[in-house]
Image (cartoon, rainbow, N blue to C red; front, side, top):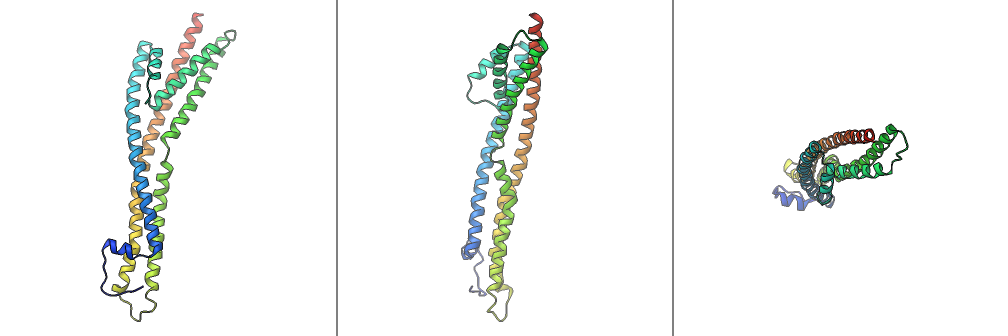
Length: 241
């Protein structure tokens, strides 16, 4: 390593003069940062759309409850292509409810008949709930990985760069700060890039996890409310018969 007093300490020069190991670490961190920002923006748009569609369907659902127009709402949701998770739960649950209501044995006790329909509907909605939740949580582990690993990867590049800087002083009889400063500066860039990749990923992961937890709670509440409506409807139907 050629260490002189006159050094170009510009950012580009420091990166270009770094060892190939440090440059590889920087490149890896830059790629991870770009990928994490892509995940952040795409996940933000998905969750924003999900909240908007959820609010729309909740208004439609509770209006249908007041008007006892579940079949009309189900037919309306069947025509849509872009639906919220809560709307998909309703479609799956209502479809299962209709199939089970037709297939249940009318000879059994009415309480058994109601429980069979409720349990089958619950299982169908629970399966849809887990599937929709998995889709919402897609790529979140990547953000967690970038947020937790990037600082250590950057630190590795920094340690390697500082080690090379001090090794270059082995043949120098009198070392000065001006001689070792460029090597340390170029090594510290790796840590800076690691933090630049990690901080947005951690913030986004925490924010998205909070938003998804709120949506998951809303889905759980909706499932319970819908099952209560199914139970009431089945009880009224058995009482009429």
